[in-house]
Length: 121
Length: 344
Image (cartoon, rainbow over all chains, first blue to last red; front, top):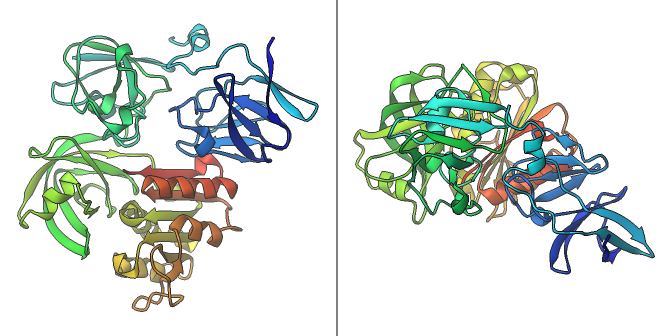
């Protein structure tokens, strides 16, 4: 377990995202009003920087580049989205937002768990 | 050569000729490989070559910046097979039987200037082509390497003539080539139709079109189809056409014609980015509204309360398209009702 402070709870406004460097690991903190998500800073589709391309409306994060989108409460994929978001666990403590960072989460060309999931029929 | 593609939807196999790209080979045989621009800019058609020899024709294609060549990553739109190949594609692949793209020959005729840096041209096809309003084709000539994507301006079934608009760019190879030709038949190869930014009246929705510069091309096709299908007797339409100054706007007579035919249900606004609109309507085309500002901002303000039962079409330079998509999402338009065509 490695809970690390990302920022103060008031540093990321509602319905915005902000990128942080946490001990060399890039983290995008997403404030969707009803909570936070800490994710890798790129879209799993084409590696677009979500800091620029991400829009949050009614708890849904959409990448404006190719319209992949995720429900931030349930992490459900919306529309034509084909890959899930990877997330770090987050919690709030004493006015700070913390993320549980074991190692950097990276999107692979094909993720291992997808291949295990009977990827090629 | 036999190409086998492994995807989330299973394996698909198709034949690939020596001269065609793997993307075109799959698409013309009904294998819906992922793509957007089909010309090396976007990176959507990336794949990983697992086995076989391939030849990449445009190694520095901007859409390939994030690829890992050491792992065999390629853009299928820039890759030809040199042997049987197995590729992996990280997405779903469906198949289709109707309206498959194909390679045709054509000649360019009737090049005419619309503004100081925009021309209209016609392409007469060797075989007629069916396409949906909003689609594009890729044109290639023997004299210039690589393909260029252009959206059809007109709309017809079994079209023998397709029409395009082209903006002259400072270092645009194809536009320079076209601008310096005499008005004689210029032979080109045509691959298409392509693209998902399409209008079908049977979807039964209001339409909003946000276009920057020559991005108006596909919107003209959509308006032609919508007008012929009498779509605006039941549904509303709003078109926002972004140009720098009033002198840069074109197709104004045709746009006025669509407004007149719509019996009040179609609004067209010309948004001027580098000039202040001094009148509420175009001085020579009073049925066309004028506004000042970036077209996606003008559109966002105008349709703020009207995002209802609507499909939005967006085409133009990447910054404009991204801005328009952002405004539409913030306005609550579902992603499945936003269709875009980005060119660079």
